[in-house]
Length: 204
Image (cartoon, rainbow, N blue to C red; front, side):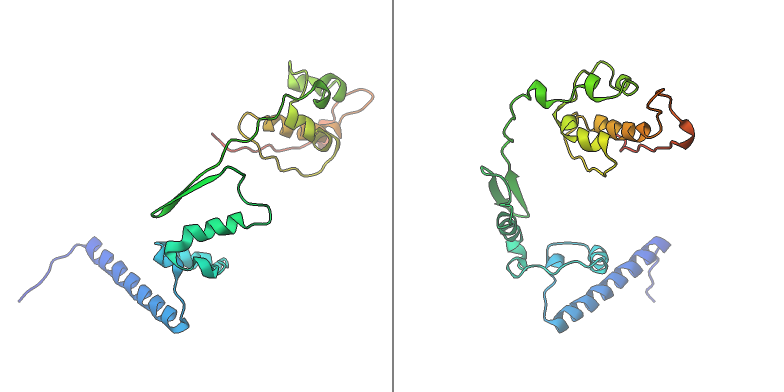
């Protein structure tokens, strides 16, 4: 008599493989019944991932990108045909097997801001808030543009800028606005009993 010795892990792996095979067979049957081709499976996306995306309401693909070989070119047409004109002028595209290389030209460098465009720390901030900025005499261009909203209002802000652009000081302006609500304008004394704030940032 013939017999085979298998470890427990090999048996478990075979069960998983059989289960996955049955799942794929059911999917192929469903696709055949509906008369539709699953274009994402053809692109190599994992079946479990696709099922999660379907539960989240994955939109149906546009007709001109159902063919996987035309996927990248189709996406390029969608972007370039958008209402905002897509990528900037001078952008070049190269399509390769399985990926596309897009080269975007560097943005036009803005001229140096004039002194009148920048917020002066000494004149714009109350005396109690000025030490926060140390030796900084003027806010930079982004901070100056946000200053009316960040320091003189309680509106929400979403600030997107490269590293080193001064986003932390934008957050500091918003915190100072919160602190200002608890500072006595006559004595500049802070009432700490009613003040709470939480500053969160991504670790590097």
